[in-house]
Length: 239
Image 1 (cartoon, rainbow, N blue to C red):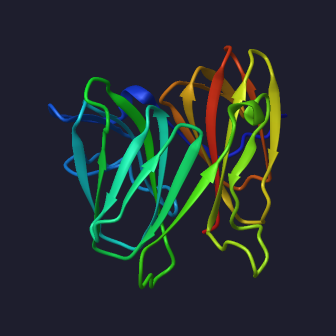
Image 2: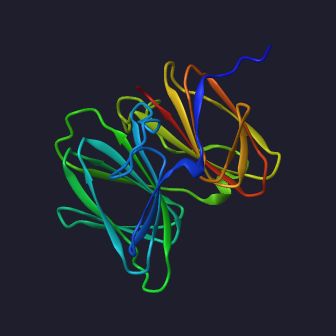
């Protein structure tokens, strides 16, 4: 008998939708005015938003608890501005990580006057206290993602002299019917995946673009792409 790994699927069509003339937001978890009893945070991960921002527009955010904020441009560059006035431009094939104290504010903007941009935004609860903000930029090439999960943000497996984060983040871009096995790097960690493009089968669960899955009590995760150019994000989180 095949053992079923415990987990939970978050379907794309079940996400919360917030839309204004400035932006459109799909929220996997409860966020802002959107609330559903079935969309509580998964361990430390409490925000997973897909954002589309109109040309020349911006949207503001307040982070109530100390958090690691991850900005992943999908189409177009993203402009990020922190409350102190510091501004950052994050390009495609880059991931920006900000570690922010509680009650921080920032804005995300579209620098293009005639094109929309699309990005993925994740917030992961940090260990208290965070006394001041910090940022780190991680670059990659799509060629390095082909048919494998490539570690982009290292974290929980690093030594005392390296970056120390309660998570690590991977991306992979797969051709149809290509598969991969991800081995979790620490005991008692949990696993979360979000499908950016295409379709996957992940531990017997069918996932399409915008779907996500959370798994626990797991040491290995098997996935197979069911479409060409299937793009997936995977995070291992230390409780």
